[in-house]
Image (tube, rainbow, N blue to C red; front, side):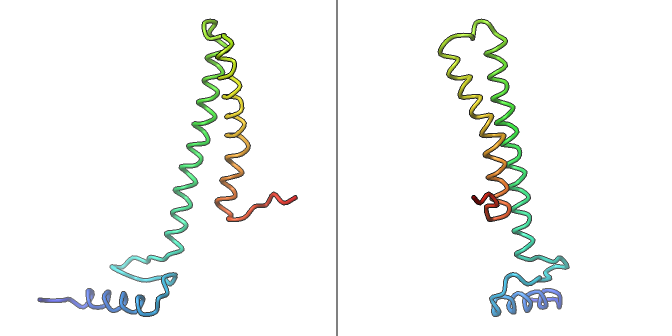
Length: 114
């Protein structure tokens, strides 16, 4: 079994990291630098993008419901007025609550203290 020096160096670096138990340090494996802070940052970026897409879809979908009921005469019934009220409240949640929750998720603390 032939092991080249690069493989041995990578193994020794990995063993040192495991022995130290310090996963926040930068480690160089195969010429690339990895750290736990980078993975947390990437996770926050991905979760932020997903949350923004969900917020936009929430607002857009509820605006479509409100527009459809208001524009189409066949849909102007008493039962659909409850759906319009629900769509309005969902729009408010998408405009007010969800962005504040996203900021709380990103900062890890609430800036809205009374």
